[in-house]
Image 1: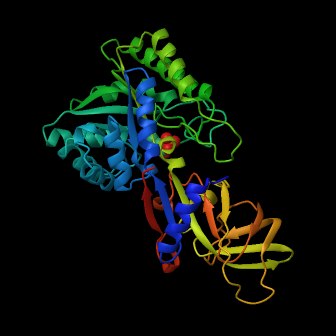
Image 2: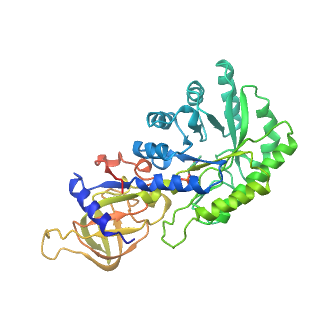
Length: 402
Ligand SMILES: Cc1ncc(COP(=O)(O)O)c(C=O)c1O
């Protein structure tokens, strides 16, 4: 990853301000611009929701709101409360995720959450019971676990046994049971097959298949209509720097054609985007504190590790890495440094899984005191990490609006 001089200066500046030299830096202009651009090119019936699990910091929620995101996708009461605090109204919230408890569902109903996504038959019955008690009719989407596979996805939620949704193979059989629950108001489907998809055609295939399921459902149940179809998230980010780019222009153009072909222009569509909106707004920065050779390989130890940024090791993906030279005074003559070699780089935790790059990585030059920068760290970063392990200080979070 090549950092431009402006970002190098900003990171060096914040590094001197960060007590433990471990921090995330976010450029808040990225997300706002992306939301506005998507809204400009997508068909009007397609609404952008922010999947806040990608980065739940208040500044991201406020940015999504200010940029005009139509709503927000949450997976817990905690997320819902944070969304409301940041300015979203309950009528803009959809509540997803498997295993929702009685308490969570009741909270959702009592707080007038716009839509609750049903992930199983149990959840449908549990929610109906609560709604009956509270004399409320709740809008729902039903999540279907599709029996097709999305090629090239970083993470798949489909084509296999899965905790998300109701299997497509039995969905049409069990649907009448859910439609009969008087306190649930069926609004449509949620089918989210895969995450981190870089090829537009692969995600469009998901849309095409969902439309086919919708047609089948409506043919079999003529009284029922899917007013809303939620495609989930899935727009990919090129973590491996292969040059691939998820083309939103192509996606918008082809999705419009698909909607027209299926004569679905009177329906509403939801995109719950997380990673695409946030990943390239963030950098995780830490400092090299030790370098040594072990059995012929350089071990580069930083003050921060997987407890701050777990995603690389959790998904076995090397994020783009850069070193910002600091020319710190040497601790002793003969101290080791890195020069044109493959290295191990990790943090101070007492386990082998504490790697900042899960696969050994080539580094041109690095010395103790230099700043290590991992790019594309704005999504699934700090809140997906085990920050409490070993009691190290948490990283700072700094923001710029360039
Ligand atoms: C229900 C749901 N919606 C949206 C997303 C966001 O996905 P992405 O970050 O790939 O856009 C996720 C991610 O796991 C999810 O579980």
